[in-house]
Length: 417
Image 1 (cartoon, rainbow, N blue to C red):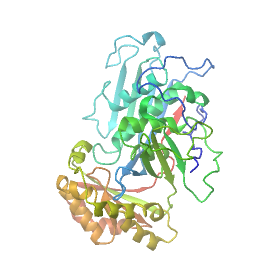
Image 2: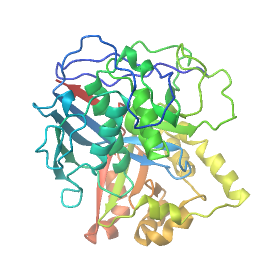
Image 3: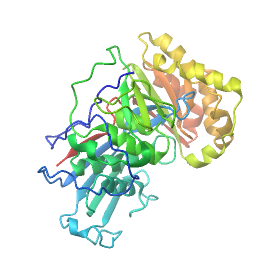
Image 4: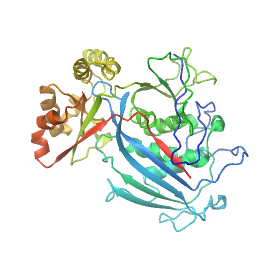
């Protein structure tokens, strides 16, 4: 399987563009450790502000536990503004959470989480930004983070993946990473790569795209998150199937562009999605942590359950890209059936499970979104009114709302100035 070049993060509004990167070669050291060698002495424009937009994501899609993810057209937007007083000499200065020191941080939050999220270095976006800056060899500097949060927190729409991807993407942009990204030590997480399945020959490389390469962002984000199912669609957009190469498995002929054969690390394949596929996400007014949802899972599952899910998840790429809507809806219904994780978690979110059963009883491809408690419905065509009618009981209760969303195909985007 050949690995195609993946589009980089697009420059927008006339901002500075950064060259596309296809992969990373140096994977020594540990994530978060600073580079021991400086970045090349190539003159670079001083970047004072970076704007990042990261889509919401839904993982698992029923049968694809810990491997399948889908990006949705619903975003958090974050602006990182460098402190004018920031300079490299502040690298070892004690930090002020309120941003009064040149290397401190000020956090402004609008929308989701504005009453609960921290406003200091413990904020996940800030901590990931700091770690990625060290990895990319940037001296510590102060900045203001202003975020407009639309993605619900702890609901199964990829809020933690969004935060991780946003922080790393901003750090890569401030570092001006382009063709020299192969010199960056990204630590023990291995190499993140993506290939895209389409009607074109998979060995042909795309000549489109510019700016920060997405592969290093994916590699760092997947290692930080611990599983790539949410971060892959957040970075690349569309439908992704991801895995981690285990030591001793071998890689066959898989390569990153002209780099050496792949070493151990996270990988993802991006599949095309029909423009007629839409997602309806039901969002409750209660949260469920991913950790708690994982604790509900058994150490082993029946062999028959594993076989069941293998057959269903294999349908997903075809189900998401049908030319016939009726057939596509039938495939989506089958492909979202699951026996590996949802049955064990339903006691944690009984109202979510009740909604899923109600929707599926009327023929809709409903599943838990990520670890829950959001409920995802995938469908072809305009079925909003029918879906809303099927869920009228929950929607009228005042404890649920619904988002009818297209699929996002671009992933994270960044503007620099």
